[in-house]
Image (cartoon, helix red, strand yellow):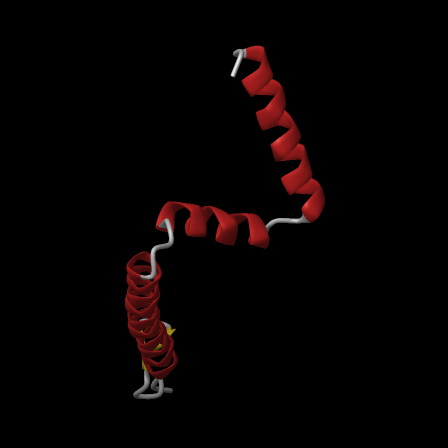
Length: 84
């Protein structure tokens, strides 16, 4: 009994092709989104905002409040230990 034409070496070629194509589409979407984000940072900079600080705020907003509080406490402790 012969294997179906869509199976090569035990691999379902159509399924593999579908997965690869979906990943490629998502990679293209990610590239477009990265470009859009870069444009927004440029807009923020031209509006007078410090983009490093904007990035920090975005990072903080992704975290749980308890994690942010712990990091801020440690930062304060370390700064005091260094006399800052």
